[in-house]
Image: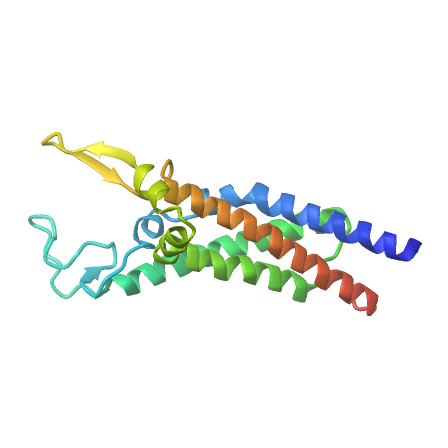
Length: 204
């Protein structure tokens, strides 16, 4: 009975520690570590051609000759930008987890840690592409919330208000962050379960 209780306490403590670490570091790696170009282009979608900075072919600023510059579809640029962001995010999350656990003298098995990071990374990639997120929001009855809670970033030279439905302050952004954090709890639980399983087998 005591052994089972000890295992339960171990699992709860590890799950809590991982959840707190990942949740606390999430804004740092999701915002500060994210390159501006990736933040701007990861949601790009469409078959039209764009340059690497996201500028559509044919809409270059006056005097900006881009003859011979590489182009790709907007969808491809979006996936590349999202993948690049997730790669840096996952690297930061893994490094942060190792620093916290090793500093306190605890070792999470590499396999368990990679599974947790993989869950966070893959779902982060899908969510940040925005189309899957908006599809899920619509199915969950959040379409009106997304349409209503938009933000005004700037007003152009002619006084026209530029409204955006994504980014900080919007419903899409809040739903994005809620999913990331919720999935992080599940990833922490899976990581802890794998760690306890490894410990029982004497491989931790």
